[in-house]
Length: 253
Image 1 (cartoon, helix red, strand yellow):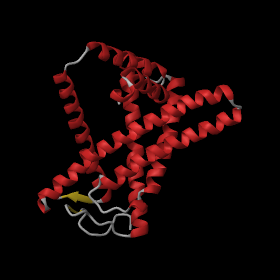
Image 2 (spheres, rainbow, N blue to C red):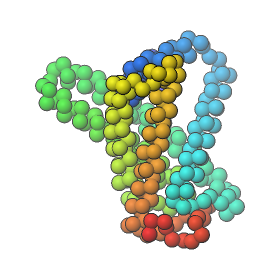
Image 3 (cartoon, one colour):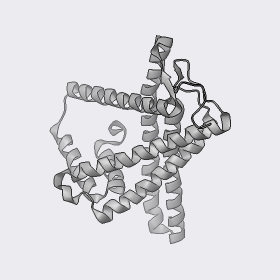
Image 4 (spheres, one colour):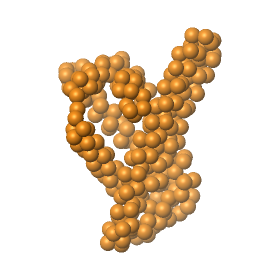
């Protein structure tokens, strides 16, 4: 996104998001790291290596996430059932990364516009209008996050899942994710739980945030699987997968 908005704008947006989630102290440390990285300079070869490592790492994360979601849906990928289909399904993981990147780009544009609009509204409107605008901004954040979770729950598992079965779970996950983010930001800002760890405090807070996010993600996946089983019965595996658990019945039935 730096090519579209400029490096400084993107850095400031990242710092603002981190500040709203992990607190101002962590945001300042991240900002300093970004500033040093920006001053270090980079070559074309270094940029290519960095992008390659980023894509390989991101794809690996999604593959591991796919395996975990398969466990929740009680299916297992079987490459022998079709090598081409297997690689095609894995290509979906990479495509999902691009889709999420695109959604985050759109979200960045809209959230930047909303932030600018919010500043103007706060200066020229009543408190009621400001409160309404903040509610709209909160709902927009939930909507974007819910769409991201819906994509994960629908595309990543090697199971035939209908869209109508993922929306409720993704909306619940997005709501819990946003509420948790707000609560953790308040806690981190007031309690400073990482102050005892010194320079490693930022890493501790990031690990805490990742841990909470993972729990919410897998809770949403379990809820979606239970909801789909309740209203559609047996969830079938995809063409390259088979049922796990020794029988064809779903664990929630």
